[in-house]
Length: 504
Image 1: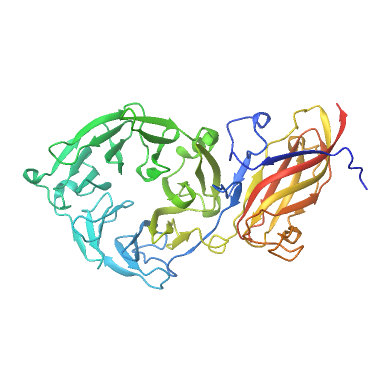
Image 2: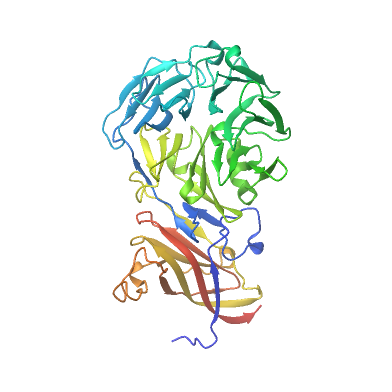
């Protein structure tokens, strides 16, 4: 039996998220050198993500090819809408059939849409870069906007009871807005009009009483409530948004993808100005890797988790290899993780009766999926990875003989994962002990809640797994590899117990 009288402990919380812009020597123990398919949890720790499952059991019908990607997915009127090929369809969530609600459209690009209510009736308007904007009521009756000036719009947003259109191919720097309360009225004498900016428009977003106009190299802000007092001022002429599908309202700000990564536009009421800030420096290499090679981008917000997800889709990359980034606002800081295995070509987030519905349309399979569901990616395993920094315990010159690792975690059901202890920066000559299975049957019972020696799932206290380990080195790192078949669980923190060895 080992002599534990000289045992040294070090404990740390799992916090700080994925860090790729600093040397492992300069990282804090709770940060992550790898964090794939885990999410920084606003409740603390790193949580293995949920999967996704079919929202409608059959594929969206295609027009000419089964490889046609989904061009739009949207929840509206208690149904789910999807565009594919030259048609738009609706279906009942959980149902087994799609109904065509608009067919014979000209082949178009990806859709954008806006849910709104000008006259007491809920409506949704869609634009697709080619056809006239199309309006649907809750009976899914389609009506095209008649004015040719907005045909082929790429962007649409409701603002101050006007409908704003932009991205027309012949006028890429122009925003056209309708009469108040009439998305298909364009008489200037009745309050319609247009404005031009000096850059190509990439997105529109209404936020806190203003309309933000994102361009390739600039950002503008429109204030006012009608034709008589609309004013447009520059927010910045130094940075723009490279893709409008990345613009989201998130954590009280607007977040978007700039040429140098993720940025926010933060309103500052005190001076009535706007601050711009880059937030993705910690994972900038992920953006550098994907910005130039991605064919398209998609994003979603999961508001109950204060979480933003951005996906990088390439036509030549299969689903398993498709990457993305998770951004979580925790306090006043952003924490990041990497996504792998979700390949959307269209997304939507909708909150109904307190339920957050996160949807994506698959790039090539034709299915509509609901995220945050189940323990797999529609039957495919979720491979989660966590790696700590290399820890020297403040002295890189002394060998540490590891005795035990105590994992503080919160299971949601039985888990399937392995713990690895790695030494000396995983050099080829370093010790590489075999995997230690993380057996949830080892969980310490919660008094009054379970039978001693059995796990308690969903309790208020996080149970512990005490794992004897072996090996030694001057630096120590921990890995957790998820087996891909278990329910989510959160890694809360670790305690490492070791003996001091000789100095080199």
